[in-house]
Image (cartoon, rainbow, N blue to C red):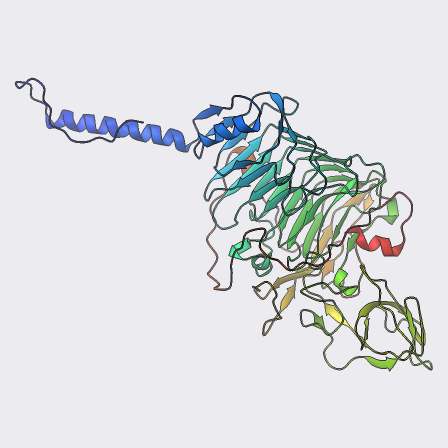
Amino acid sequence: MAKPFRYQRFKGEPNVRRSILRLRVAVLASLAAILVLALSRLVGATTINANSAAESDVAAAIGSATDGDTVIIPAGTATWTHTLSVKKAIELRGAGVGSTIIKDGVQKGQTMNVALVPGKVTRITGIEFQDGGRPNSTGEAPIGVFRIDGSNTDGSQLRWDHCKFDNLNGFFVPDTVIGVFDHNIVMIGQKGGTPEFMYPYGMRWNGGWYGDGSWAAPAGWGSAQFFFIEDNTFVNSNPTYQGYFTDGFGGARIVVRHNTSSGGIFSNHGTESSGRIRSARAFEIYKNNISCNNLNRFPGGSRGGSTLFHDNTITNCGGEAAQFNLDAYRMFNSFTPFGGGDGTNGWDKNNAGNPFYSGSASAVGRNTVSVSGSPWTADQWKGYTVKRDAGGFAYIQTNTSNTITFASGVFDTLSFSVGDSFVINKVEQSIDQPGAGASTLLSGDNPSPPRRWNQVADPCYSWRNTNDGAPFNNFTPNESNIKVNVNFFNDTALPGYTEFTYPHPLVNGKALPVPPSPAATGTSFRRPWGGKQPKTKELKRKPEKKEKQSPVNEMAES
């Protein structure tokens, strides 16, 4: 770098005159040199070659880089046992899949921890990642094997492309990331248990925490304010269990498009078993080739938030038995801190007024409770809740003239004794359920429903999908509070919707414009991972097998 120009007296030959014009030319030339060098750094003209693929050599190369530089990892195979931190807006480039191979031998924590830089793009490309002996459970979310932290308000962006992920023992975790994951190969299914890959979060959306900021904002359909998953190949090679290529949490906003997948689904989590962390907020899933590989009959599913599902080509998903499930698990159990959908919970929209029925048990059985006489009509209470005065509730599946049959819980099941008093209530919409949308802004670790708490409907839409060549445009709601033409629309396109530019601008080397910052809320806050967080017992999926499943097991499918 040229030294800054400073005016100085010339001490040359006393008889030599230097004109003011020549002096100005020298000043301009020197300034031009400085600008050229500075701009070359800004546009990433500097390339730094790591000595090998070893983590220490790559870390040393990154240490000497500045924003805009390219760090080259040469061909070769290396086992990493320590976390590689990427906190600069660099391009980290391998020699290509099959040439630069990184084996994950980290025993605790991430293999890569990426912190995106405000106003800049970070890119990771051309690397194959394989398992290298990581212990089970050390790469689970929210820590993950790969963790990327970003922001939707500071202009930071990510492109992660042309890599291969070969049966890693842990998850890919982007949190509040704007950008694209493209042209990658993802292989899962050989590590035991339920095969899964990506856990997207939107925890810090608009400066909030737990996904509250994302849930207080409109979905923004068709905009750049999503993490895009496009033009990838996803393969679950497990011969028994269906895979989950995504499982969104904490206000996540994801677009899944133009991918090919086999043996797994794109789905999300609900506001339930993950405790204070809320459901994913918005998913766009379109123009994918989705094969269930005859492992199951669920090409997709949702446990919370809004989903647009359109123009997908579906095969080998059980033919006419295929379903895209919409589920609200709070209708079956209570989860800290939001409780359960018992018909009286202030987080939900309940039928106002007194209970629909009050009585006491005259006879009881497994998942049944009866009353004296014949006060009811058949299925009068189907889709309502029965709440025992002494505690506990359940979702009513059916009833006769005097006997209620209710669903088993996710963790535990309600039981009655003769003489127990109970009431019957109804939930119209539960917090963050499928087809729920923007809500009042929340904050705090253990919130109570604020005054005038409200959550509008933001429906799911399905259109122009095919299943083995036949139309497939119907969602399957598994609870009565998920209402057709309110929380979801079948065979209907979202009015006024336009897909975002394809391919993503980052694929063509064009960064997205920096969005305007949201208005200050005074209630938003940020806390690091690892802080004290209320947590309930985590809900584990019951992996789907080839044989026919019972309705109880199918609850866990989305």
